[in-house]
Length: 250
Ligand code: PEP
Image (cartoon, rainbow, N blue to C red; front, side):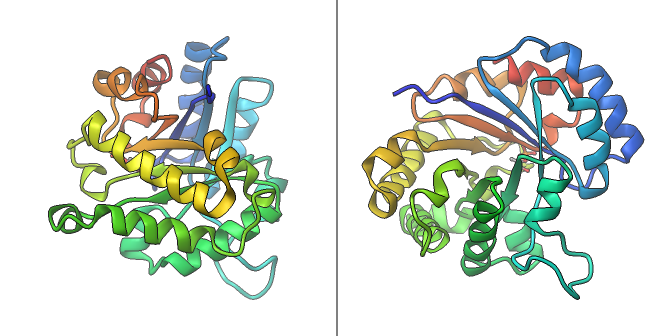
């Protein structure tokens, strides 16, 4: 089964609209004509319009970094799925470890966001991954199974069809440490098994599971050539057009 890989940039809280336009002016020509992989950029909300404008008619797609589960209302500073769609986003990141660590995201809120993202027709990238202490205690498998089963609860295979999952070991995010291909393969197999349990075998075989955690031009090829790794979610190394284009062309 060959799954088209997704190379996604998570810009976190970096770049102004002007800096986003400058990035796109440099980046788009570097990846022009690249069709082997899907290319996605998830900028901060205020930069979405700038990135969308530069991405129109190119092979670059755009996503949000989060969304709220209500459609609209008195929820200051939140953004709905419909708003992201209206802003021409195709993708949305859900449950990034920084949201879990600093902003009270739980498996339950990940599930609520996933339901509305699917409802809005977005392609969600659901992030899961263990912290260092969990890996050292040998409970990585239990953590991934719990995060996946709770995130996927109450969602049909049809609704979840556009979903991708990103395996991001928290100890590898922004630290320069990377999971070995063996560690990633093992985690991805486990996530695929959990998806099979919930959504069925056929769904699981089509599910794209990205790896994230200090992916850079130097290690992209080794990671992305693994059968089980269906793409990358890239933080730090996605902020420069040159390095992100090298990862896209792994
Ligand atoms: C991320 O933000 O999802 C990420 C993986 O960051 P980094 O590539 O910087 O480790």
